[in-house]
Structure formats: structure tokens, C-alpha cells
Image 1 (cartoon, rainbow, N blue to C red):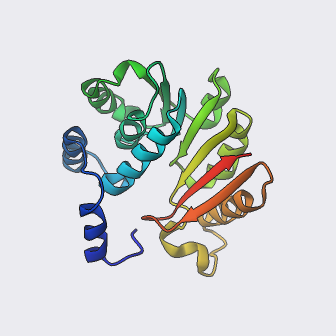
Image 2: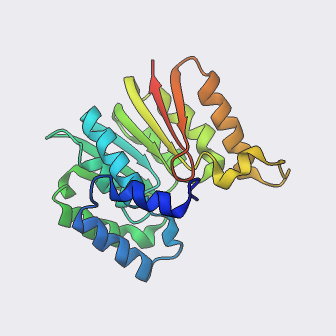
Length: 213
């Protein structure tokens, strides 16, 4: 979901960095072959991820929620020469598509794929991270935060997607809506937890940047 008019969104994208051709190809193939293609980060958010990564110039990145690999490739653009990007997704059917584009990109040897439950995989990754991107099952966001905060280097960033959840965070909460409840708790936690400083941006469906103190 975008929170600005479509014509204005088009203007914003037109006046931002162009989308690389390989990511255009990945977008096209995702829409042709994969369910829920709207889950792609897309041009504008992809360029935002790329720029943040280039500013951080990370040696170690963690992504929770690979989907078809668009956001991973955007984040990989900022990796240091020997940097590694660890990306986790529970859908094993997407593995080959992800790997196809990772290898075409030139970052293939720097991107490590994991398939399974991120809650079990994260504790097993022997690394400290400069940058973490969370874009997976919303009900687990608070738990993901606790799993990564001690693995995040001081000054490291946590990027969190979909934190406005189509505006549901300001509507009356349905007691059965576990995702919205989790996101409300997560957003409050990022605001109040003394370990991080946070700014929530109204980008697409809500995008939070949190920095570890």
C-alpha cells in the first residue's frame, strides 16, 4: 500500500535513481510466475534499500524474508568487497529463482541463502550484523527484534517493512488480527526500547529505520 496519490508516487519514482535492468527482469518474472507479486520491494523501495546499504557499506547483512530476491539484490549493492548477505525464507520453491538472479547479479558468492524458520536459523548464524532488513511474517516481528539485537553491531541499522500495515495500526483492533497486534507492539517497542533510536517513515506500507545505540 502507498500513502500518497499514484500520480505523485510516479513522480517520486521518476525523480529517483533508475531501477537496474536485472531487477526489472526479476520483477517481470516474479509477476509472471509467482503468487502475490505485490510482495516485491519494487523500484522505489529497492533504491532506498540500495542507498542505505551504500551509506553503511556493510560487511555483514541479514535479511529476514527473501521472497524472490529483489530486496537482497538491492541491499547487496552496498556490500563491502568481502561482505556477506545472509537471507532467510521459508518457501523452498523460490530457492532456485532467487539463486538464478543472485548469480546473474555478480553478488552470487556474497549471498548466502537459508530455507526454513528464521526463528531457528538466526541463532545459528555465526555473525554480527551491520544491517538487518525485516520483511517476513508480521506476527514474529517482536521476536525477530529480540533475536537480532545482540547480534547487531553498535551503530548498526534495523530496517523494518510494512509497519503501517495498510493503515490498520490506527484502526480499531480486531482481537483475531494477530499481525496488526504484533505490529502495534513492535512499533511501540522500537519507540521505547533504550537500545535503539527509531524513525518511522510513511514510505509505501510503512518503513522504519532503527539504529542501535
